[in-house]
Image (cartoon, rainbow, N blue to C red; front, side, top):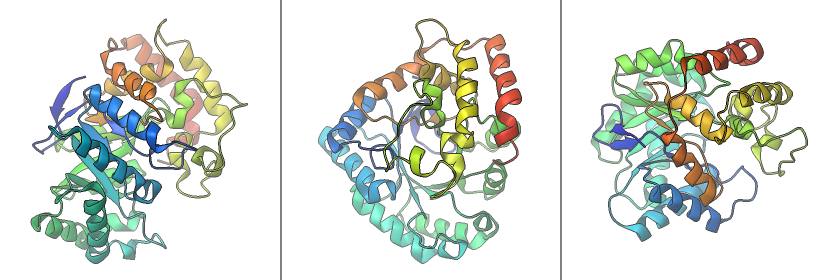
Length: 328
């Protein structure tokens, strides 16, 4: 894996990191033992970036991370968490300094640290991006030493472009994969120009781009690929990248033809993301140690050819873009 600076910060991160949503919840039954094994395998593979959130398993993900890092000792990886989704109702008015400080204090306790490496607003309502006082409050919390810096996890390209207008926003987390290519049209260029780190989430389109899901695949009742198929619980763009299930399966079969012999589709999909110079770190999740090791190994694949990249763009334009391009 390659190592590089995380935007304007002093942190050095690997281009593949560990997404800790699965070890928290909403992905079916993932035991704490499997979660710990997955995280340890990721760290053993050299990953130096972990992404979590206070709502992943109501703090379970953060606590597992704290326990694993304490047991391992040594140099700590960068740990980014998120805040805001504990609000009920989840409305713009809730994104005030008092509430955010409460969420941050809880994450500080869960993670067992005195200062968070990075806190990200967790896909806030669009109105929040037009409230400078929200970001001023984060500036104050940074000056107080509770956070080293802050970023935003966004739902849309437009929100990302608005967020980086705030000079102290260090990073943007956004969905980008073979089925969600719009960020590469304008947003990546602007983020790179401003030296804003880009954290790429949902890289495998909730498993569609693993190539292992079929029409007959059954998802547990507590798996978002079951209960959020139409956006019932949160933005549908987080589930299968917003692509209608049958359309996604059709596109997967076309992508499969481009995958080199001996390479998994998941590794191919991760390597596709790393072809973008603007992508600072991609954060695939893992339910077990085997998946974590496979994610790390994807960084070692040879660069994809111009012909293959062109073919993936054609598949996106023909099958996927009509469903997702203008929505996110």
